[in-house]
Image (cartoon, rainbow, N blue to C red; front, top):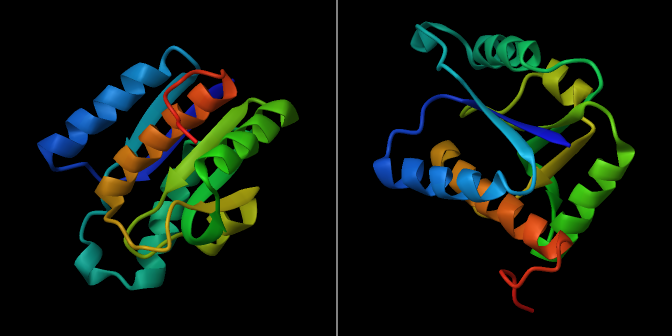
Length: 157
């Protein structure tokens, strides 16, 4: 199944870029993964928070095609252990469709339109991470989930 990962803004730290590359490279053995980076909104300082979220929301939705399952990485989403996340992924794979799209929004979250179109919201922690850092954490957890599903020895219990 194809997986898209849509995020707002660039990753600016080399160590995070390298970490993302490491896990994206590992994931290629399991899934087709497309990472889509949407540029930060220009002149955002002149816009209200709602205007920023709406603008980002339009950009996010423009990267999604009909039939894809949208999963938001959201601080109010459901939290999983790594094994539970692998089960969640397996259920999504079993549902079929054109693929799964995981989305990391901007600093202010998502527009109401994006929330309405999402089939699920997940949270990777009760802690708050930078939008740049959460990308690397997500790719590692995605890799971990795939190794759990395949019965490979990466994850220890």
